[in-house]
Length: 527
Ligand SMILES: Nc1ncnc2c1ncn2[C@@H]1O[C@H](COP(=O)(O)OP(=O)(O)OP(=O)(O)O)[C@@H](O)[C@H]1O
Image 1: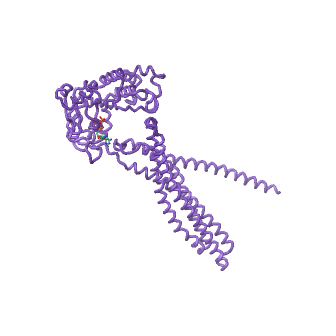
Image 2: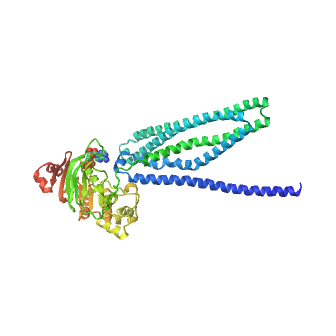
């Protein structure tokens, strides 16, 4: 073999090698960057959704299952990144190949190209039809998986109740019912997809057959050479490539779009408690609270509170007592604007709370709830939740004032002890003290104490009571009272019944009046 041929082979091989290496590199870059673009879009949408959910009011959370929200922020967005990456790229390449192949086919033979073109309206119809059906099916599937998530969330967080009632079988049945609905919805989507893919396959094979038959006839009648016929059939196959690519998008596109629709649905849900344009920033409020003709209902049809007038002076401790469900908690939930009044107004230091910036209003109010929520993390982090900028000294002082020192000393790693999910490793009394320590750090002028209903041992109760008395010093304090201990310390007691505020006055005044409070006192005292 002549040497120049060898050197030619070597040159071509080296050139090919370089081309291969470069194309591999390019493929890597396109693949990686393409996915990066998709992931960035997905992450950004997830961030926006999370921020939007955080802005929602209590009403939204009252009416939306936690598992459902979780599903929307996680699952629903999974396919959007893939779609964002593959969608435009695949569609562009497919359309270009499709148009190119048709153009060449027309230059070979117009009649035969027209035969191939017949497929287009049918193909278009099938794709649009399937797309609409699949969009619906995947949207339903996302809804069903959200319900599965909600069910899991419910059963897992309530597992102690489930097991104590030995209702595992019942829970399994409920879960399986949701799981089956999900299966049905997902299968529905794949049914439409299989129909559509088979339809596309059938149409493309039909075109091949039609081209072969008509092509053979054209050759027979000398309108087409054999070479042209072979070339044409080859191009028909080129035509199928983009159709196959678009078919592959048939799953991804409606899935991504269904997720996107659920994303926009939630994003369009405007938070119902927002700052007015001219809302003012409030700082260092004194804590004079007035309810002026306040009417409120959780839904528009039924009022829980009707025409309530109430004055609480700065620095005063007011206890709310009354039968269960009368509206004590509701009254207190209106002050930080967890809900907005339907009629009337609430003012603090003479300013309507709806004219205050929500964040600044809430920074002035501290709430110690019955059920203290502890985040997974260390004890230090959980106390510091009251003020994220608190120094170690401030945290320690708050812990001391909340009588937490002995608790911390007994923990294996002191402040750095990990507190399990929902603080399961701590007792009710210990959790209460963490909530109080948070309040010392937050240091708000207004305090709302939703007194724990569960009984604590006398010593713990005394310790907590001391901490609470210390906490409420120089603050306007509202206590949703269930036990008499707190009521005795109150400057004033407000008796709330289904009819509204029934009685108001000091402990002794109310006893003397011998009304509802006196009866309530008698019942509790007899216990
Ligand atoms: N988030 C809510 N959505 C709808 N209705 C609610 C909501 N919270 C409370 N309610 C209803 O409002 C009424 C007043 O409830 P609220 O919790 O204020 O009573 P309460 O006096 O604090 O009761 P308790 O002493 O049992 O805590 C009740 O009929 C209750 O069912």
